[in-house]
Image 1 (cartoon, one colour):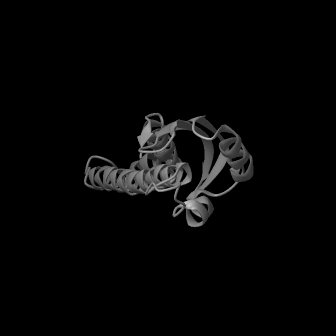
Image 2 (cartoon, rainbow, N blue to C red):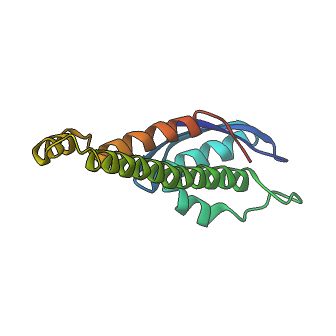
Length: 152
């Protein structure tokens, strides 16, 4: 997935990040910086490639640049944290929505007195796999989130 981070109060004006998500693990595949200290940021991009977001945040979140209260790396960490937080909230919301919908469907199917027990079993067997629907919805929500820029 690709998104953009627009840092505040640092020389770098835009960060383009490509990453993958596997359950709750976010891996940085590539990062490009616009503005800032070109050589240093290019080297950092190489060093960060393949790293987990949480590892990056732990190692780089408190770095300061000169007399500034922040740095390009601190701003990157803020953006990475926002991506993870948004994803986790979305996972919870989508999961609740799917479970509520499944419960409504189950109640409607179980309360339908016109169907025999055998017909009710067939209806349940035809229902889409809850986990498949859950992960498809999560993926769509994540694409929606990271399709927008992240402002630090």
